[in-house]
Length: 239
Image (cartoon, rainbow, N blue to C red):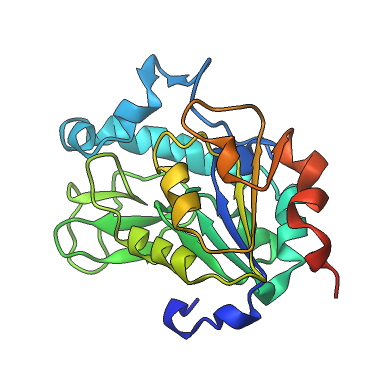
C-alpha cells in the first residue's frame, strides 16, 4: 500500500493489532506459559545479537514459524476487518499474512514480514515464501548467505515503520481506534491511546494486562476477538 497517498477522511477504522488477533487461527504467541522453542525463550531467538552468533538456529525457528503459517487460515476477526475494505487501516505488530489472506488492502507491518528475507550486507529485501531456508539459499542481489536474516524486525534492531504510528495524532471524531490482542509489552499502547485523536477508542484483549490502562479507552472487551469483533468494529461497519 502507498501510505503517503492514504486518504484518512475515507478511513473509518484504524486497528492496532498484536499476536492475540492471530492466536485463534492457531499461531502461537510465544509469550507466557509454553513460550519456548527447544528450551530457548522466543525473545532470545528473535534478538539480532543472538542471530549474529546462532544464525542457523534462528533460521530453524523461523522455518518452523513459516511452516505453521502455511497451515493456518484467517479467522472470523480477520475476515470482519477485511469486510471494511479500504475503510480500515491496519497497523499490526504481527509478521504473518493473515490480514492479507483475508483481503485487507491497507496493512502496515510494524515488525516486518515472516515470508520475506533481508540481506544485511546489501540491504535487499525479497519475498522468500513459506518454505525453509536451505543450505544453497543466498541473497539474490549480492549472493551473500551468512548476512541473510529473516525479514522481521528483531529485538535490538530499529523499526522504521514505527514512524507511521504518528498517523494516530491525525485522526478525527469519525474514526474508531481499536487495539486488539496485544499486551503492550513491546509497543507502549498507553502512549498510543493518549496520542490518538480518534472519536472512539476500543480495547480488546483476552485478559487484562499490567501494561495497558483500560481507562484510556471508551470501550473495553476482555474476550476472544472472534466473539466480540462486531462490537469492536461498531455500527460504522454498515454501509
